[in-house]
Structures are given as C-alpha cells and as structure tokens.
Length: 149
Image (cartoon, rainbow, N blue to C red; front, side, top):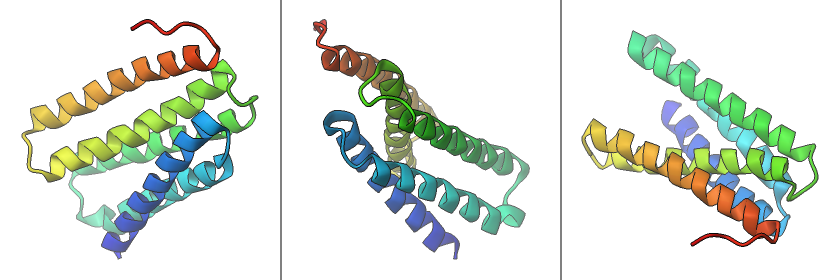
C-alpha cells in the first residue's frame, strides 16, 4: 500500500509541476495544477500515515515537516488562485510551489542515487536559491522589465 501511495504522490506531483509551469507561462491548466497539488499532498499524508508505526522519531519529525510544507504549498496555490494571473503576488505563490516541487524531485533523485547527505542537502539549497532567482527574473520578464544577465 505504501509503495502505491508513494507512486501516486510522485505522479500527481509531476502533473502539478508540469501543469503549474504551463499555468505560469501560458495562463492555462491552473485547475489541473491545483488539483494535482492537493492530490500529491493527500497521497503524501496517507503514505506517512500508513508507515507511521514503523518510523523512528527522527523520521516522524522529518515526514511531519514535509507534510506540513506540502500543506503550505497547497495554501499558496489557493492564494494564487484568488489573485489576478501574472500579478506579482500570483507569480510569487505559484512560483514558490513550482520551486518546491522541482526541488523535491531533484533531492529525491540525488538521494536515491546514493549520494552522500552533504550532496543531497547542497542540491536542495542550490535548487531553492536558483529557483528564487529564476522566479524573480520571470516576474520581471512577464512585467516587461529588462532582465539583467
């Protein structure tokens, strides 16, 4: 059951990432993005719940934090829904979730590749910082402002 839930979590997360990227640049598929973001959060919470008794204290804290972060991402997706598309606040909320999704995929890939923990952490931090910089550049470009190179 846990493997199925993790598969559904990853699949809906990928759909959210792709649909959110399209929503960011084309203004379409926002409903698909938001629904899949909610679904990926639900599947994560269910996967954690199914394995809860098997987890150690450290893992419980970590997976609780991941689930809370997923909830924050859903809240930011809902906030983005309420704002005019391509407004700075809309882009900030949507961009935050897209950076978070991309970061999660990279960190899991690096972790599953057997990389040392310092590389896993470094990749996560670099993606977060790079994502922030890319988001700010995207906001400037969509606003018609010059983007520094």
